[in-house]
Length: 67
Image (cartoon, rainbow, N blue to C red; front, side, top):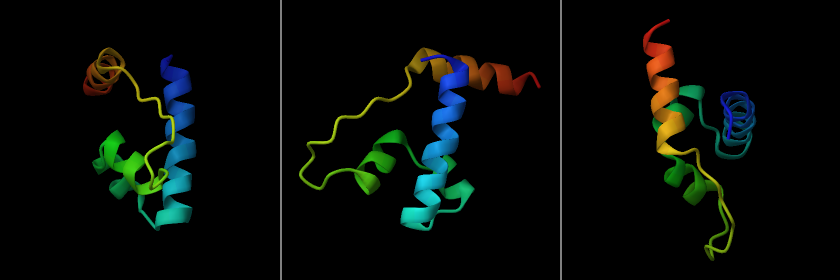
């Protein structure tokens, strides 16, 4: 997953969380991917999910720390 794809997906998921769950942006960014999946996912647990890799998260954190 590229940084551009992550950013696009994050915006989409943030919007979904706001509309469906009533989350503010801070709520979304403080949640873990697992918490988001549990909140939006299939209660039976059969929904397929894909999370960003640790490497991508680390590179984004490093990039943002330098801005």
